[in-house]
Image (tube, rainbow, N blue to C red):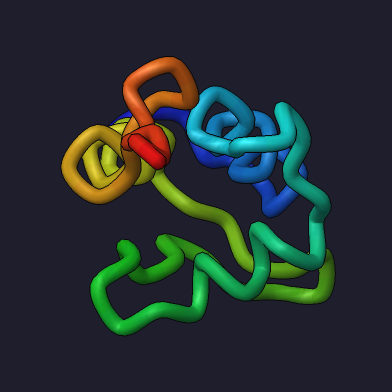
Length: 74
């Protein structure tokens, strides 16, 4: 298991896949609630914590890096 990360860390990992180059904690929270997103390893008073390796693998499989995003050919 990788290190445990917070929703802020999840947002940071998502930045390279964002068309705007930023991801808010709120947007990361929305993405983290998708059925396919890895389940948190821990949930407590400080919030949910995920395995960094599992989140990174999910991002690699489900999100395109910003520079590889499809472009509008029109």
